[in-house]
Image (cartoon, helix red, strand yellow):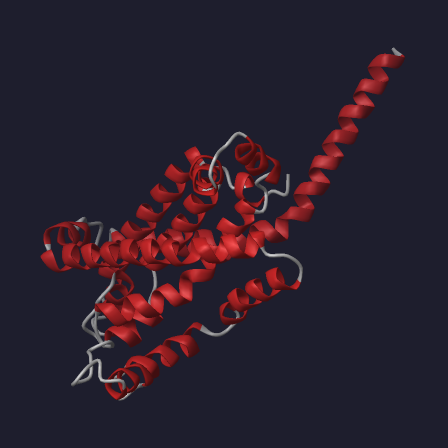
Length: 290
């Protein structure tokens, strides 16, 4: 009887604890529901509404070549930005990993200080630097490398340059976090077995840093898919990405259904990307301190 009474008390205590935890978590659930679930649900319903339940928006989305070309351009820019950011970020992350004392802090400071600056400010800064009478064109003309100003803004090139700069910290930080967890004993062991520095780097260090590379590439690629401010400013209306199509459908045409269908498709693509990456790379492998 005593054992049964103790078991009943334990179950009652567990039920009260669960009820208390649910009550404490309710405000957070309510905020998530109001700010995330409801808007997404409204977006999903709008994408199937055209004076009534309809698939017209999705039919137009998959049949109109304008949408196809926009998604193609968005994916192409995202791939280029991700690749260039990886090439630039890996040496910086490696330098921040092997640097000692204040040098490591200085490198990370140079990475983070621009990261804390407004995206709009950085986009306008690149617009000033790359315009026909900007610093870059003026310098190249003064040293005799060009005769006429290069077209560096209001096109795809300017969009890629500014986007790489803005998203670069999202590539550097995951790679550096992964590199910092690589045991230096492995590199020492590889060198002691006769491996050259390049061979040890290629066979030991680089494979162990792949989780950070995958995480950084995923972050940069997904963020670039939905970028708006930088393509709008640097593209000059000529480089039209998916986010700009959504904005124009709402602002110019009041086509909420069409904009919702594009948004739902973009959201589905992002979810598939994150789900695919999560199958191979749990986030704790990148950001854990173990």
